[in-house]
Length: 398
Image (cartoon, rainbow, N blue to C red; front, side, top):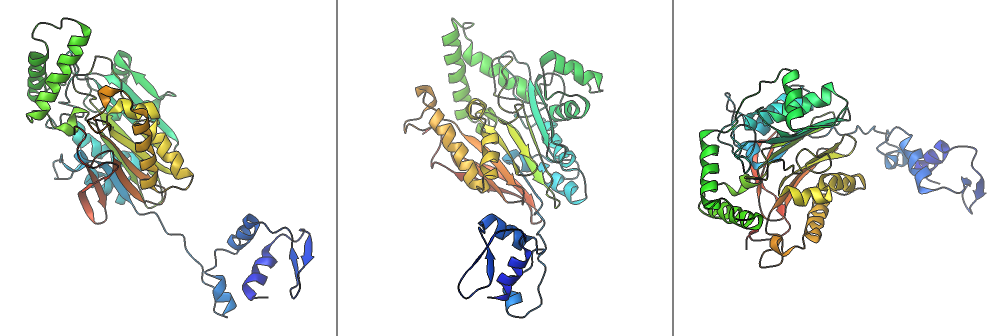
């Protein structure tokens, strides 16, 4: 019998029943695969048993540390702070300097929230149908297994920090509306009367002019007029298509394997006042399990929220799927749930995009989308914008 097998058999529990096999000494029965692997693992992860059989000194394998990475939607590598760092670059820098992972991600997304030129997040985000900027956000901290969220928040430029305060200072996961604002004020956030910029207000007024020439004759005509106005503004380049459903999701992991995530948004442009999408809902716009991975989304929030797809992605990774494969499962779930004619293009596919940004516990990452779309990434190689793996070719509107 080989030395390697003898070594493992010696490590097995000695109180197992034994059976004799021709030409071999007693072997414990039954030897399940689990017991065999467990015995081998108990050797201190030797490199291996073949080295024992060949007479070489056993070498101890060291577990490889996760590769630090920050992944985000494409606006995570556009807006810059005073030092010229983008969201993903700032977050990665702070992670490498030893900052708490969630603190690092928040410092990154705050750059986008405070940028008046980004019309999808925070200050200057495109307002609702009444011209009011209402913001949503969520945060999840893998090591602490804690989370916080805020929805329909008005008057605070950085809703992600209010979500963090809810996580840190309350036993709740979600506060909404005026009461969320009241909480923010009570813990020291500045409340402003209006988060519109000249740009976001001008775009809202243009949308109103196009969609409300006769003050909405009835609800259906109002909805149809609003959609036509938005589509024409998109076609004319007045609104960035990526920002019509605009959001930023940003997830990260450090060399210790500690995960966290943030999603923050001004929501769907010209939305019905009070609308809450997927961004502040745990399991939809964001889900983090510190032992498995993190996933977050941008795009049509209602479609993602219906399937709780960030949770679905993490559960798929828990069952052994790679980040890319887990993301594809979620995209296919979105497609299977999209059956209304108004949501389908001429090919019978969804006429909108949904994007997922994913990291597992080892630092392996992926970005996937229904249709080709850019995303941001930062590793030791620097910050880049890459293209997500798409389920379909062409454009959503085709």
